[in-house]
Image (spheres, rainbow, N blue to C red):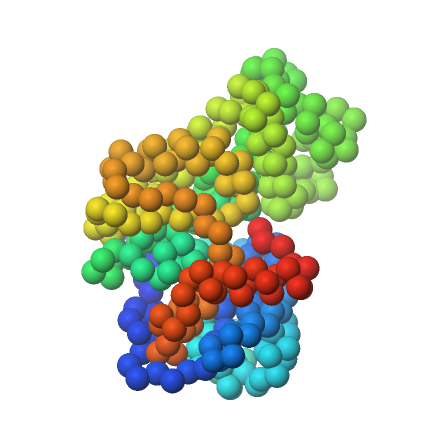
Length: 347
């Protein structure tokens, strides 16, 4: 069995460019439900946003995904008063199991210095400031990526909702619906998730959920949205919902541990948690932290406050030779202010 890395950083992102004087950089966070682009002027400290629909090729295909990306990037670039060729660095982090097809489409349409990576790379950079550590995504889908002190990288998970996405919003929601159906037919425990699902999806009965899922059918994002009800039930003490979060933490935690071991991380380093599933708070974060600390006692595990697109801006600044010119805290503030003005929200 091959055990070489599933994902490695492009050479442009491995180390800071020498003698760079870049001023304008762009980061893009492309997800299963929406795409956010941000153009940053490193001198004036101004930031402009652009938006698009899904850019996950698994969900919408490479061509549509690329159209969403370019719609978002063109809007951000236009708001900044620039032309694409004026960007000194651009990193586009997109969701999906394979980014090669999208990268090919983007490369044919835009300047050659635009770098396309998997969205977990952007999450890692947001979580760690693009330094050694681990980034774990648990939103609609899930994915884990880390880089060790010697530059070794490793990805675990990220196989999509049919073959993976362990510990994600979709994973939690799909298993919650299974639990509701098992409650209905008597093969499982009673759970508040049954009534919650009927109300959330607007169906007449629990058994109607199966018809809704298969005949409509519900999209991945529509199903994943039910995870908020799983969290609500768990916080209210529902044993089935709480057990699902314990299992989610175990599944995702195993992937984080694999990344730690494969990259050679040790001592003090960050594991950043990014995505809507972590809004469940201690239900999810505490058991995940406990599992990771069994192999890395000094690790810092925390929910990342910076929007994932900030990690892409960190990497774009590195590619432009301007790494470190903008501290993470200042970048987070700029992003939060821009998102607030724009009325955007983070997954």
